[in-house]
Length: 145
Image 1 (cartoon, rainbow, N blue to C red):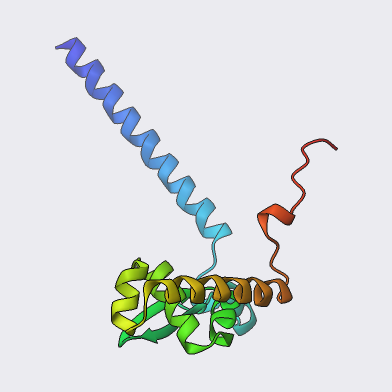
Image 2 (cartoon, rainbow, N blue to C red):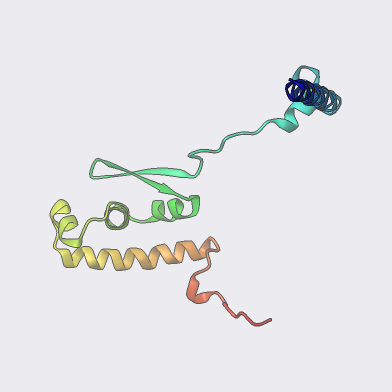
């Protein structure tokens, strides 16, 4: 019976100490935290954030299929291409079609598609370079200081 009483007293002491710790923590939080109702407009503005989802996504339509392109620089460069060249780039790299599949859809030979893609890639590279895009073979990758 004595051990039960000691254990009961120990449990009561632990619970009392834990309750005191919780009260201290709440008081500490109350001192440091501020209610949103008590904030000024300027303080509320500092806590605000704006989601920027889909801001740099651009949609191009090719053969009735919407193609989403991410990145303002790339989308701008694609928009500058002639429609036929843009279609070849989008169908090849964004929709994963082969030259033969694209040729069948556009009613041209696959050799024509290959030539259009090569000239379109050269033009894209030129447009992207104008915008300041650096290419891996042009970057210096020296690891020595």
